[in-house]
Image (tube, rainbow, N blue to C red; front, side, top):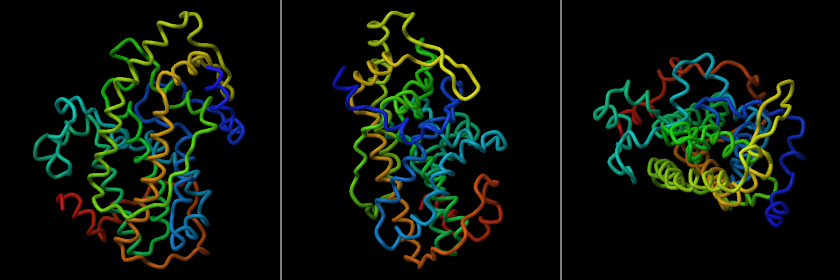
Length: 332
């Protein structure tokens, strides 16, 4: 335990001391890494890029970092947003879920679209955002390139979180309510300081769809340990020591105690560090691959970035020009 405390020190508090985290125990499906994780993943992915792309993305670093959580913010205004952040894999048969259709067209042919929306469309939506990004590069539309790049980072990061691929996303069906925030907010908040996030350079992904589904199935493979580790902690710590009151901004919430979170992280091993590192490298690689697919267009770095926090992309207008979206929908 002492070793773990030394390893997982206070970088999170040091870097993001000014941020208040108000999502600790909100029973919702759309939060994953929290502000810290999503922003860090988008930021770190920029430094995996080759020189041709690095200058452009580095110039817009602050926008990409701050808009990493735009997809979560849209949940209040867009009723279609929440299903884009998760998938209930167990609704489609036993692991390793190889029979689950990989393209949206095939999925709709096998299941009603209403059923798909009910149980989450995360892997298919990542594909859609990726194809939209290719078209944005082709059009040279800097506003959409940046917004879609930020959104792609968010959804891809969600795919790397184990609790985003299960119906039991908060431990609510196994008597482990609050597990979502413990895994995805409390652990990074307290112990993410010394994560080794060096990933190497971004690569061109030959089979993007396969990579996306690999993310999903990897996350599912970690679920047994995610639930088991929590049970082991509950058996090791007195119930009165599980949670403590904390002030988050102006709100007092019940948060998992440091001792509980530390022991849980010890039982998990390096799962969350590994998932974050993979998300960073894969995001940089998808940005890079989309740019290559678009013909490697020149990107100016002296264009004013879009307004932060403005409304979502006008997808209906964009789709009129977006041949790649139709390719995605047709499963090509």
